[in-house]
Every structure is written in C-alpha cells, then in structure tokens.
Image 1 (cartoon, rainbow, N blue to C red):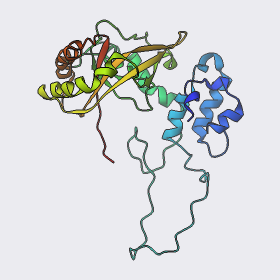
Image 2: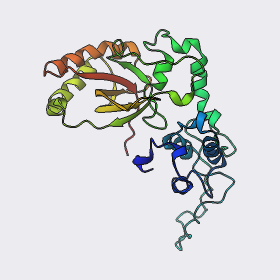
Image 3: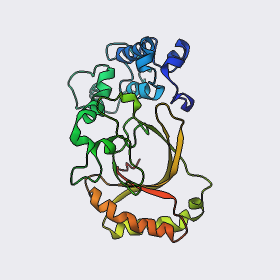
Image 4: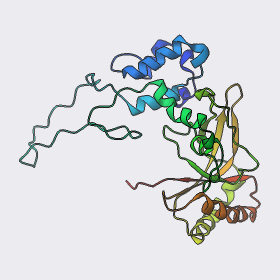
Length: 281
C-alpha cells in the first residue's frame, strides 16, 4: 500500500480509490467488502476506520477462497520435472494469527478484529499489573498498536513511571486506541555516537545474561482520536529472544544502558524491550 494512504480514513476515499487499494471490486474477500460498506454506511460510529486497519484484514485474507484467482496461473513449463511423480498439490496456508484449519479460512468481520481488544477492555485484571508482569496486559498488547499488522508486545520501558499509558474505560470504541507509526532516527545527538555506544550496550545486555535478537533506534509518532499527531522521543529498541527471559530481568538491565548513554551526554532517550526472533534469509 502507498504509505500516503495508511492513515487516511475509509469514509474520505472515493470508490475508485477503494478499488485501487483492493478494498472494493471483483475478487475482494466478501468480509473486507462488508467492513468497507459498513464504514461508509455509518460514518458517525465507524468514521475513524483507516486504510491501515482494513489493509491488515486484506493481508490476512488476500482473496476469498471461493473466488477464482485475480490472474491466471502461469503456463506449465515444457521441461518435465526431475521427479518421476508429480508434486503434491499445495494446501492453503492458515492465517498466521489463527490455528490451522482443514477448511479455507472465511473472511474476517469487524467483530473478529475487535475481539482481542474487547476481551482486554472488559477484563479488569488486564487493566492492572499482575505479577510477574511489570505492566498491565492491556499496555503490553496495545503499546505498539498500529506499528504493524501483528505488532510486538511490550515487555518494559524506561519511562514507565513518567509517561503513563492511557487506559480507556471499559467498552471504549476499539478505534480510539492510540495508533503508532515507526520512523527512522536522523540528525540527533545519538546518531553521532551510536557506533561508540552500540557495542557497549550489546556487551551490557550480554553481561546481564540476556539473549538479544536485535538492537536498533526508532521514533514513534502517535495519533489519538481528536488530537494532532505527536512525535515521541528517540527509542533504543531492544528485542530479546522469545521465552528466554522476563520483564524483571530486562528492567534490571535498563539502568546500565541509560548510564552508557548518559556518559556521552545522551539523556533524552527511552529504552524499550520486546520479544522477537530474527529469521536469516
């Protein structure tokens, strides 16, 4: 999708634009089309739905299994395969967020997308901190809302006490969750010293017995309902390998990283931790 359309609202687009984006027209999953039709029919309640939100559904279910493909398959190669037996027919891939099913997945509905939010929004335990976690399940799941179709879960952040995450009251509209976009970091004091501090940060992570997957810098812009977009501070973004540590361990490793940065007069950054694996291609 053209990045210029990510935060545009469905109700503000013409049918021609929606067709070009793959949200309307032939071979569009019926569930995606239904969502777009519902949004256009009820702009007062659903007018905040953006192209990014619908594109997440479109990417999960790119085409309805009952419809023919948008373009014909390429002709068979005239060269026979090396194997004397023909290859087995491929089976449909299951959605990455759903368990495998023997039948093709059906198109998603708006309520299916809202389900995780509804469960956490109405669960009082999800809105409070429950040991061994150091942040609420709500913040853990929605701190990076909007960064991708399947954003990572926050483990810990160094500004937890000074920058509280807004937790709306129960039954708040799903689309009022603050939406974030990740940006690169350019022309900041940290850029000038990154080659010096990055190896020291990695050494500190290892000294704490943590197995990291990635170390990077990022800035997040945030859009909240009824407010202008804001750009947050520079973030030292650290991924640790899944199921190898816990929130307490990464919290305890954070002060040393802040000290490394403070030694070179970098004091206006935030350290954030999440779990992720790195796949080598």
